[in-house]
Length: 502
Image 1: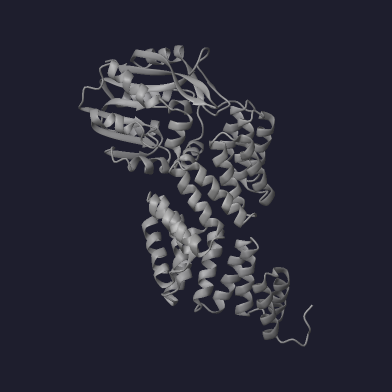
Image 2: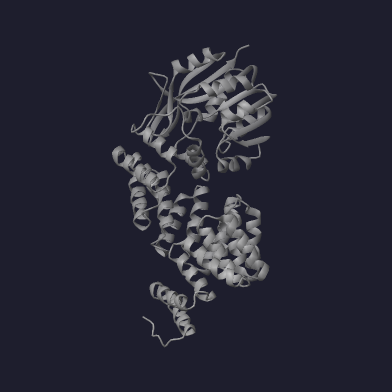
């Protein structure tokens, strides 16, 4: 306990010294004593808020720093620290406003400029974020954190080589900056340089063993490469560091499912739900395990999140790990059906990163793509082959579209629909007479459709033929093909071309 003879100023000085040395509990006790004696002490309120943020209590930090600012709104550092606490609380727009207030008071403030860049990046304003990082670095070139976050913005802008350069400069200044290793790993992974990405994740973990996000990201990379035991170990380590992490519980569940441990996977999905994971998405995963009734289709937020997560290295994973063949198989089926004569108005449904786009473009007068995942669409946009790209549910998009088209293509998309009736109704509406609907599905022998443990639906040939008859299509061809591999096993599917009848 502090001596009663100590002045408030002396107590505050002691608290700051303890805070700087990392003795947070003792510092907190002295800050509290200062506030007991002097409830309106600006410095004690402000620094108690900083300490609360360091202790993982951002809302408490916001309240304390806010009280300090109410006493004196002229300190740029307090506005900057309030912005950081607001960001930790997920309140990005309010954080940005706090950084703007800090910069209005002190324009040449590198930390506020860098943090402003972080808020802009989280709000999707990437070019503005990059400009803010560059402004911070113009004032303070040796600023490793700003260089690392600049690398993230460059990565999101698709400027991968520049991103790696920025991460490299960051790590030259601070070889122990785990966040920059992680950022570099994500970029390397998106470039298909998985061994280097693995090394970068290991470096991040070595630099900061308590970095839960690094363990989680390393685990997802292992899972993508088929090392499910390694992935499980990583996710469990992440959870030992952050037990309440819903994403880590979800990733652990996915690893257990891949290891064919369904009862443990189901329990892990329920743990994720208890930690705040999306209820509809968890229910869908449990349905895939046979724990709940299968819905007619997955929740849109599940599909969007799934593909946003994999957008960066989706093409590499599909083509080199899963040996994905749907786009060329569909083009061959369309060619055989005489549908590639040119002057086609085509829609690529569930276009993803746009793997079908370059194959369709030579035959298309107009080519549009639609997908639920914004990150996938950003990858498709960089191919520069589409006249239009829309972020939407494909059925809603088809129902709202005014202009007819000659060709609908859905490569590996209908596996995320059980009941295909709404898709066929919407497809018929938008297709011109004689237009073609070409698609792939995973195949099953009996019944109409079923949700598999992979979280994807399979459909039968008889079901597709019944849909054609019910919705005014002629089934020109339905051919059995191997669409891709999963855990080195062939995934059998059906490649179909249907023509719209008058």
